Image 1 (tube, rainbow, N blue to C red):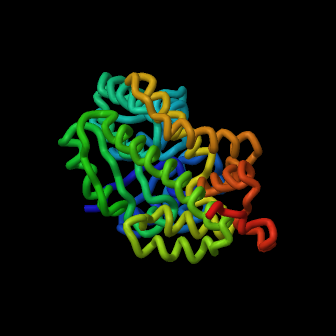
Image 2 (cartoon, rainbow, N blue to C red):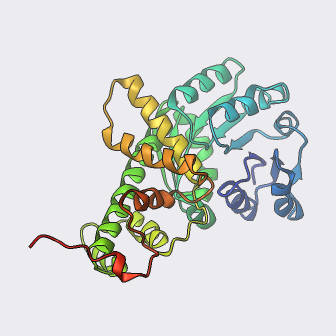
Length: 308
């Protein structure tokens, strides 16, 4: 029997995820701070609620997907929050990317009210959300993971239970560390080719066939070459995720110099008003540092001399 699902967070990724749940036959109950995000699903029969509290009275399972830890805490514990309406046994699956320490604190607070919690951040961007093939990293009680798995299987293909509360967020932090540094590496690669007078598009194509192949080189490398930065994952969100990574490293007494370098590029983008662009726009900061521009078709600016 289809499970009624509450869903809060209909952004770039949340809306296609909710649509996939709707297409799988699950009745949807929605709340959004921006009413315009509700139109598409409302037209397809979703029930709209005026507050998270009201939504929580109608379902046993709620998914949240918002920007940061304070947003999650407000949805859960605010005056009109989920906890004001949820009945004991309700499962809340937070698919936001927030600090692991925050997820652990949330899980403990919810347990005091006999509510269950999974942290289940995702990777795969808007493309993965639309296709339903996200990677989902889950922390929480095994019994609640088993309860959530049929729903998560609609949203993703690689679904991994990593351990107790906060474990999913640690895995997502690791993901963002890798992605951020790979963005730096791809940008540097293409800029070096451009500066040396070799077609960076041809270099990218050559590397896709070798050991350096990656989805970052494939998808984001093309975005860098085209200077097409319509967001699949916004710079401001990646900036926040790297802040979480460095915060977690500080809590652990861990050196992450590569991540700190990537953070500086994201800081530069945020400081120049580019937070709404896709995170592959990191290359714009790299271009400014070396005065090499991938979309510049003037050959005299490049083919810099190389010492024989």
